[in-house]
Length: 163
Image (cartoon, rainbow, N blue to C red; front, side):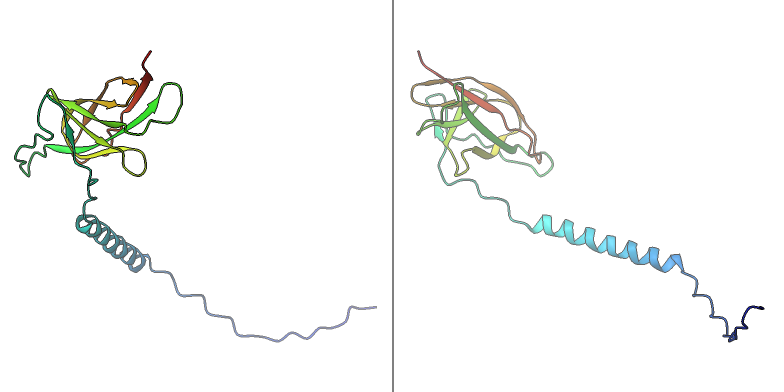
């Protein structure tokens, strides 16, 4: 038996989709990237600087609490330093602990902030030594380098119980 006949309907051929033009897409992406970059850089410039803790600096007999010179816009003289303190035996850092730095013979200390660190947003640029004071402990001195505009100096000072 011969196969059954099938009727076919002739449909008009669909037109091909329009070609994608890459130039308008590339220009759109470039404009969006430029706008985003502009907004991000403007947001950084307008963001207020974090306030330094209100706890005043404590100076010892070697000098004043702060030795700030006049800063020129071309060469910043201060940067960010965050001193962290731990104990050698792993016990909690004692109440009353102060930490800071020694620079050019001037020692500057402060109490801990709420997160337990000892931040200085106006530490002098250059080499200094981070240190701490705690009742019943001796602290090592840790060399650190402060660079203006860089959040990199975070020395860890170790407290060792007195014997």
